[in-house]
Image (cartoon, rainbow, N blue to C red; front, side):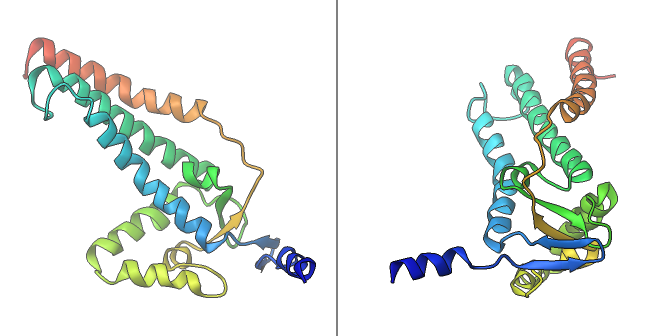
Length: 196
């Protein structure tokens, strides 16, 4: 009896979706939910964790200000990493960890900045802000057979299982530093010379 139960458990098929370019295994609903949760929690935890180490209680508190610049730099770096990975790989940091990624349904390639960041990310965020029930409707759509949320339909994407992607950090780190170093230099200038 136990052998039969084990056999039936291991034989449960992954849900596959057929596209013009082949057949893909869709990401589990629970995996997508957890990855999304981590994407929201990571910046919050980073901010609260670093802020708790600040030598003062606010961003305008004299000697504490450089530390707040450091916090903002870390958060900016996180955002740049997310945008880079979404644009290049169709993955956030959490999606990489959970081995799922976003692909264009018509081409089966990462959708790039326009599709993944603007249409799927920013567009979805704006709809959630201006239409109160949108976020709930969007989430409930994942329980359909093809597991595509409203933002997937808008952007023309699907989320699939993917174990092939490697975690490359050099390029997004360089991009982050290109933003953070000039901002830091501007901040130091104004700290020394005062406002214009």
